Image 1 (spheres, rainbow, N blue to C red):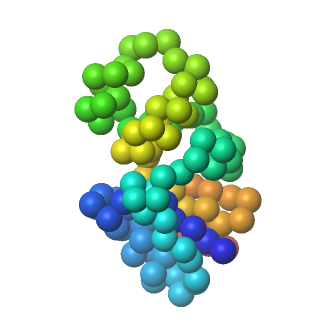
Image 2 (cartoon, rainbow, N blue to C red):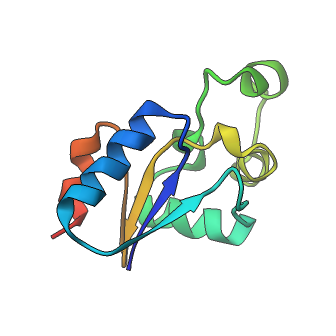
Length: 114
């Protein structure tokens, strides 16, 4: 099952949702601001993305700038920050089995729909 971690207020996330809708494939939408992601789920997503936790952080968010920017943080602390403040998570994230991508640009999503 394909899953999209979606924020309806984000234009890039809406673009990603549109790609999935036009694909004709079944998918599940998780509005991660309404349905919080656990630390374990986020660790799994980061592993699927094959990135470091800091690469998933939206560094222009006010909460990042005020509370975290410039501080020496471990991966675990960064993950905890994203779980506590889900607005910090880059979006959209699309997961298809053992593959995942950040849908920026939305064309990235096409790579895992095959």
